[in-house]
Length: 434
Picture 1 (tube, rainbow, N blue to C red):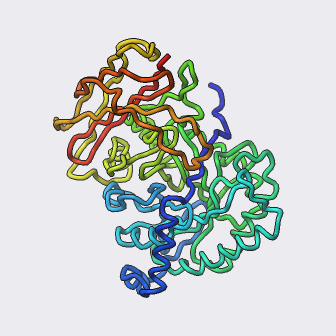
Picture 2: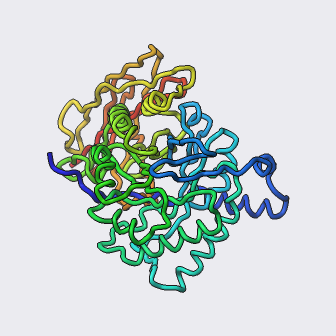
Picture 3: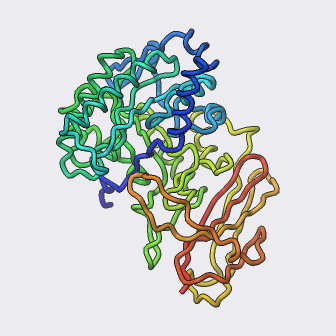
């Protein structure tokens, strides 16, 4: 079997969605005083987190990270058995307070800008203000009882053949954090293992205490062995894990990546969690929320209205939790066109779907046609949701839909199945009109 790609084209989830909201909250706090949620947290003891060999200890007890990247529906996440939320940047204050309410710990990410986007870590004029911001960030949140550890950047080394300037910058940041807060460890998050990037991190950034690796698809199964082969002996946390990514997925004749169904993603997630359980110190699933990345569903564990998919059942099983009322998500057994996935613009083509619900719930199917995304940003940079074409749908129903009236171009047909009890299933088919 060929070795999995060691450096797939991955994402860095930029903290765009709540940055404005967080800034507003800070401004309001300055006028009105601390938010009511802050007072109880301030009275609670600071969590003492220590590293002992390859173990993470929280208040002296072994702690295995079970959680998600995101900031949505924390109560549901806790119910599934999670103990951790991972952030990426300025939304930390909001997430810490919400996490505390729901009994979750937080890996508080500090955003270190990427050289691929123009940041120069060899320029003191750029690095100095960044480190000053980090210093203020740590001082602001270091006594919050929900804090678990500090995330030093996310995939900062991405797309750099050498990343020579990045490793000393990570060390500078980690050393600063440890000086200002010795009670919570530092974690650096890398885009996969590369052939030697972990060895470089280990030697050039020794103040990093926990290693985070973002990995997807079948590559997940070999991450622990590849990490240890590069000499890392401390705790390893999979800081993003998910389905086969669009960078590695099979493609249509015109190059559109083929997305797995929500059920197929759940099966892969179950296998990966089972394999990694005894080989890492925790796993973080991506993404506990909804975001556009190639499609609105590819990496989204929740729908836009908050419905959860079958992957939530998998998480509950592996984390010892439960879905709401023991509910199970609908299953999409098949979704296919009655003919090939390319047709002339004057044609009308039928798509058929087969669905079942393991609880016998009555389900509804919502159909959507959208243009194929042409942005295809790298490493999770923000993308625009493509245009929808509701006028192209004919006779939509629970067993199928017909498509007609589209101009030549590349599109996707999306099927969303809901059980009316908070669970859903998703699938889509790329197609081309000539």
